[in-house]
Length: 171
Image (cartoon, rainbow, N blue to C red):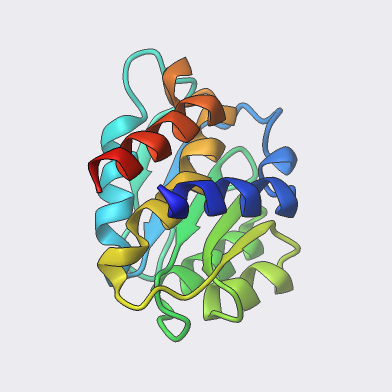
């Protein structure tokens, strides 16, 4: 529960989702380093359904699809300060004019790539173990996906706060 509340606060403080709130992308690409695969899988499973404003595609590997450009959005997530998989895609996205949002530890390779490309980034504290970072990493992405109309209204910040309370009760 505390991870969700902290991530909601950090997301709001960063203003990151405000920069993508009014976009209606052609496609949303989702990139994750190997340690954050479960986060990307969860977001992909929760978004991009028939009522979504745009399809959501997982992107693994260092290259973007040949058609990716200014009409698309990249959501990138990393759990490791040193992993470069998501950062490489962010660099490629920046060269092509793809709007992006990064989420992960402060001072990570992805954070640097987002900074070089003037892309918003939600810096989170480093978790002691990748599995312990799940809710902290997923929460900013859920907020972003909601602002892009990729999720049902149930994914609003009030619902996420209620989820945090439920997790505290179960713990």
